[in-house]
Length: 119
Length: 427
Image (tube, rainbow over all chains, first blue to last red; front, side, top):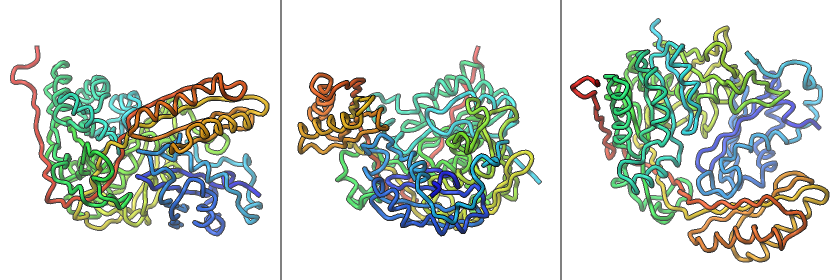
């Protein structure tokens, strides 16, 4: 099964002990497929080691984005965290290591076309 | 339509200086914003101020301003920054001295009033934990996030220095001032706040925090250029970076930054407006990326307050194991340390792959003797632990925790102090 990393990019943000993870399919036409695969429950399960609280998903089709708000980051956020990555900046890459389902296998393989504008 | 150009010259305290110099030299800016104050920075700065009443402003202010102010004053670019940190007046005096030294008669205005330690209710529960603020530890600072209305009376000056203000307000205030917006105009405040939110992290809009080789390639990342925006009176904005600079500004980078640190896309709370990002449009065009469609609701009645408290000290101790069976040796080392420190709350983890592993042990406590013991146990693995352990590093540092609460606006009283050039021109 393909990794989410092959199909989407992601940015992590942090505010107190909340982490935000926004996921964007490279091909915005795949938004609905992504929305079906990358649910709040699956994100919560994939990042279970790092998130103690609830994961809320916001769907933003006009922006081609799924935005995950993850509550109660393990260790309690940047100021008092014992983690090496106190901010949780690397959670974006951890999320992209999630496997996604068969619906995506028909997509263009990586390397066939540029993934993002590089003006 | 009337437009104004605003640049972003720093996105955090340690940010590079050259991109801002470049923007001042050839960006044709009206305003340059330097955002240098993280969530914890004011509390750390407050600690320095307690030790020295003249300290407590951003430590890199002199280095940054000695390079930027000669260019800004020559080009007539107004500079707005939160480098005042826990001591904006002292920051203002240092800035005045820098300007006097270069013979500039540019004026400096200092915004104060964010320090609400005397006003805040320490029995109120913290957002993060629900426990009363005072139970978190010795309180060292409490700073309200001031808004554009607090910056407004300072905008007649050439250099505006604040302490804690909401990051987008640093941009909204000068935009409203240039474009003739009323801060009570909700759609205008929403549009200006959107621009501020996108620009406040500087290089994160133009290809920083984005590159992923083979997936998202960024040209000349080493020469990353910082962004600016041409904002029109109707609130639409064209984001761009200077020709020849490294990085990438695209629909992808702008959308990533649009949602960065947003905990509710329908209601991003700022002191100026409640911003709704859901209908924002992001369109690439030949000179950059156009954004429009910010919506909003009137500003909240209360302001967010960041409260800093002494959370103790943190030790971090590490040792490496490499080669065949490294993972098992590192795991054995972790077992040795946790056995010998049984009962001590700590985090022990093995980082890295199968053949290049680093055991990392971290603990937080008010008991420095205990923290020393944690470091000593990791160091003693050199001669008492598994084979081939090397590269021990032990670091102990004070930790300031942050908890958040709210304060009614009427209990916060911002003020502006003007620092003009001495009467006699500098000789």
